Amino acid sequence: MQKECRRAIFTYEQSDDSLIDELAAYLDDDKNILPIYDFFEVEQPTEKIEIEIVPTKKEYDEKYNILDNRPAKQKVEKWNIGCFNRRENKILYLSLNDYKNTAHAFAPEKYAEMLSHYKKTIVHEYTHFVTQLFANKHNSGWRPKWLSEGIAIYLSHQKDHLKLDFNYTLDEISNGTVHYNAYYLLTKYQIENYDKEFVFKLLESNREANEFLQNELYDKVKAYYNNENT
Image 1 (cartoon, rainbow, N blue to C red):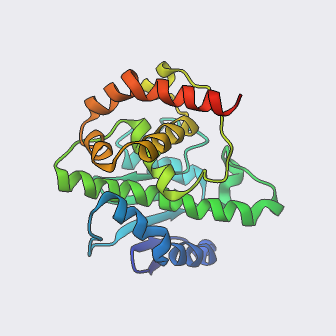
Image 2 (cartoon, rainbow, N blue to C red):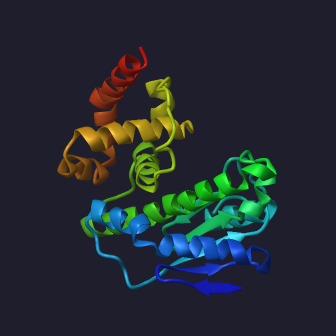
């Protein structure tokens, strides 16, 4: 089945019909999306992004490997439930109705809470799409994972309500070990304590972003959260 809204074209199975209505309404709400375009200072494109909602984790894993040019049988982590592919200009995302087969399984009474988070996660992936528009505008390459994921979390407001500790090593962050809380806290501190021109400079240079992380940002963020928690 297919549903088109202002900003996306959804492909999905009938079992997710009501879920799609929730997602489309959330993406169509300007307050959830316009701040992302404002932050990156790019125009909304006329072309709509494709969002495929996959009904099962098994099928998602298969499609993820194909989309990412990975071996067909390569294992996909249980926490992996969504991605943006810049080559295809597409978001692939698992249905909330099969979270029971992922690391994000939840009790039935938590459905409303998880639906709220699910909608923010779609905006997270949409932020990657807008980040790529920024990269195209500035003729820049790919960002380091900590910055790319951190900005997507920050602008989608996924973790605004959480009280988080910063207990990660620089090596863990630099080598791509998955610590999304660390990515968020690093990027939040950067955005809120440096001017946007400097943030843009780092978004345009993988090398400069990682040098800034190693030479300044990591130590400042670690000191800030250690002081806050004492």
